[in-house]
Each structure stands twice: as C-alpha cells, then as structure tokens.
Image (cartoon, rainbow, N blue to C red; front, side, top):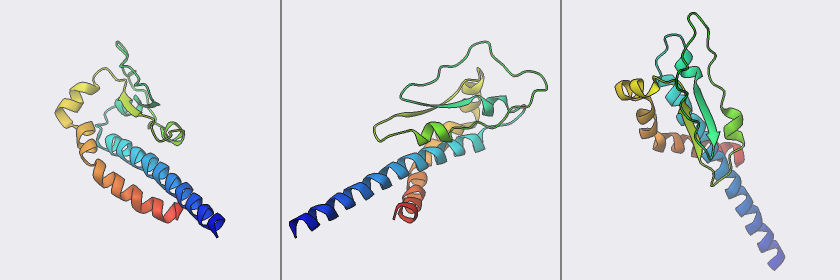
Length: 132
C-alpha cells in the first residue's frame, strides 16, 4: 500500500514538473512571438536580428545594418527555448543597432512583457491539454 502511494506521488511530481517546464517554454515563446509581431518591418532586418539565448544576453552589434534590398528571414528561436530548463534565464535581444530607438517609440518589447500574465495563462491551459 505504501509503495503504491509513493509511486502515485512520484507520478504526480513528474507530471507537475513536465507541466511547469511546458508552461515556461510555451509562455516564453509566446512573448517572443508577441515582440516580433509588434516589431515594425521595413527591410525585415530588425526582426531578423532578434536572437534568443539561454543564461547570457546577446550583445548589440555596433556598425551592423541592413544591406540595401536584402530579404531577411523571420527569426527562429524555438530550438533555443526547447533546450531551456526551469531556472534558466531566456533572453530575447535585438542586435540591430537601431532597435532601442524603435522600442522607445513603439514599445514592442515592453508591451509584449506587459502581456506576460496572459501568455502564462494561455500556456497553462495548453499544458493541461498536452501534458495531462
């Protein structure tokens, strides 16, 4: 009887840890998607300069700028987030030199950050469905 109870507690703890990790990763990806959606697009360079790193921010690159007429892909950060563990810090950074100016004017980062509670609530709902 005691062994069954212990096994059930272990299962509950493992399930809770999977849910917590899923919420952490899903909410982080959602807030970064929100940042990208709020980012102005002229050439696409600023959006493409968005980088996600774990436990250490990416520094702004001085002197780099968009090439005239170049096409820039949307950033891909799912793999960086997929490797995140509880306790890691997930940084999202623009490397475009002019990104701080647009943040000041448009607030794409701060507005996405203000929506964090909603992103977490959505991630909790999704985790309940996926993880069980």
